[in-house]
Image (cartoon, rainbow, N blue to C red; front, side, top):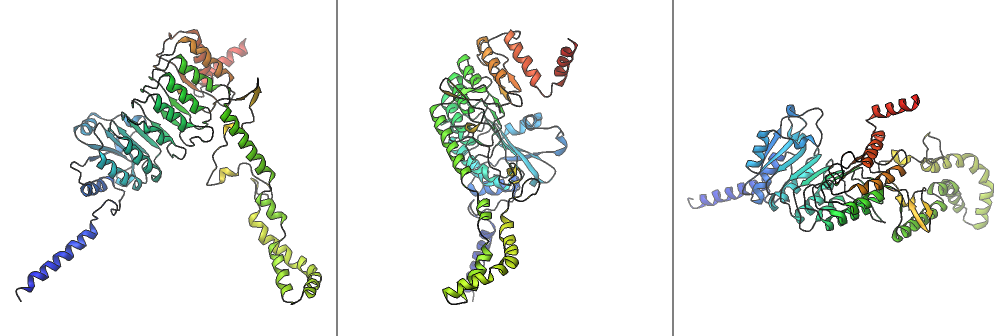
Length: 476
């Protein structure tokens, strides 16, 4: 009897260990994130064997200002900064005391190694309220950026990503602004981005056959883009009609790069590749418009229920002659009783209702109400193209509203180019803000003053200047 007791004790311990193993997953794949960053980080950190798990510090809601935006989130108190730099830590911003309301994550000045990046990629999709992610001087690798980029589409509300002070050997930043990227705000300051990185970014912004659809703000300040890189960025702006704000300040851009940027703001000639793509798009649109739409085909086709009724009644006769006779005899009855009801049932669900709710009318703005809104048409299909001297001229990029070129190496000879392009931009579009400070011309340069005066007239917030000029004109 005494020999069997240890066996029972052993069996009980094995069962307890099995139950514990079920409660505590042994791999990150088995772990189910709770949406609480602190809890999930501790649990997953133990699973992957982290030597030092980052401390999560939540900013109190009382410290938040009602006017706080993404820029002011960079400003922290001295105590918070010391905490972040002292040891690996993560600063988070909450909407309220509930840790599940986390909306911003920020790391500061410590290396995010492979294990931490792996854990973050596991946790981020569970943070349903996360809006922005800031990784400053995290010494990320290209592979980490690729893993994070594959995770971002799984984050339902993440739209702002800041990767500053993270130079990458393979310049993989362009992956963050691919055609299917969901990010709207991206900051890549101080990443030593050179000509090759700028070339990849330009291709990601737009090509003849594709363009980024969501990114509205791109910050490339404090890099080494230079004239060649600025030409690549300008190439990406040719057919991009989504980007609104672009910062290229402090990038060693001279007059050559500035000329490319100024040229893309006004009318420019299409390349051979762009002309070929334009012809293809026009041909596709012509073919699609010449073919009858599914709605027109459904209205033109005979009622399916009446055909089924005739077929069923005819098959019960058993002969061809009786089938024909029954069709002739029963045709008036079918028309009076069955056709109106059957036609109503078969056609009403297919009739497209316009803006006023009238059946049979097509609504040009129906995509606004459609949950799956189609992206805007390619700029190559614009009707305002001009043909001059054997060239096809496009109206230029009038979607970009803010361009920052301060702190570069641009001389006064580039200013007339910008002035010329700005004057050719039509009303209702074009630059509203052009920063050219700290370049190689004086602040009282005549052409600079003209540009500043034009920008002041376009500034929707500068109503005082516009009203004063109108009063002066009326007085004269």
